[in-house]
Image (cartoon, rainbow, N blue to C red; front, side):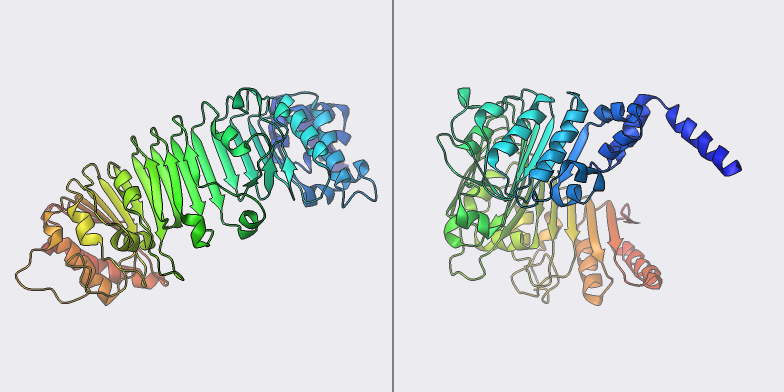
Length: 459
């Protein structure tokens, strides 16, 4: 009896909550679960329109018993059951606004069904739309009327349109475009070009590393342009050399660039306003041609913050004909790898006269006589001036410090020769906690050799 009373009281306490609170609770549930609450009572059925984020993944949706009501026994291959499930949920929303709608499907139901769903979703004034089909999917331009959509994600398969939209613009309010291994076929209008033509587009994210996409149909065109674009992230690791002939990025108002790819033969770039660049450039492993990154490196010369991968250090050394002056560079961050060298580091430091913060992620790199005096790979030559002496670096950050003999020597070399150091921040990486204290004590003993106002902080 007491248990029953507690259950009743608990039920009453839930029922007494405001609709807005119950709507938030529903929003925390997976999309495949939220519609099932509509069978609890009329009130719960009326609460579903308060759910503004919908995520439909076909296998997950069809595994939920509540959606089996909407399915027929022979609908697995055609996707009719999945289509019915999504459509039924949209009906239950009764025209309420949708903030985010995601749909991933594997079945080969016809394109008109998908376009019908997209059309219905757009009528709900959706802000974010994420689509991941199983095969070719046409996107009818007359459906893409939304004046509210600000973020669009297309993933994994080919998209095309049958005709050019009026005015050549699909989404006039689109600010963020994400393309993840998305291919494009040309109809009467080029979908990719139309998307980039969105007048307020600010951010473009491209990930294209699926060989199947590029073999079967046109993948990313290696071109991005637009005066409104401020942020770009590109991950393009498709291997054929001929696919890296030329990259075109003409974005005069770009402030942030994150670029990961093999070195191209040529670059046509415009970065008049670039503030921060993150580069992961890779050398070709199975080709005698090195590529030429000179134009790209020259184009980023005015950045304030620069992040380089271990591979990028080698590209800067082997694939740049003339190193520019980085007069605005205040923060330089680079990664190290035991099979990659620091060949370019002395020159890069020399070309960065206003550098204040140096971040090194790992001190271990391949031993070579090309690193100059930026490290202790080889015995120092007498009567030579260390390149570090002229650096005005005030903050040195070291990540992944393991306390090996070689790392200690490198730390001593840096702290002895960076004469303007004020703070050294170290992130110690050990596999056993009892090794931490000896390593930190050893680092503290290096302080007397540095400036009197320098201190070490452990992060």
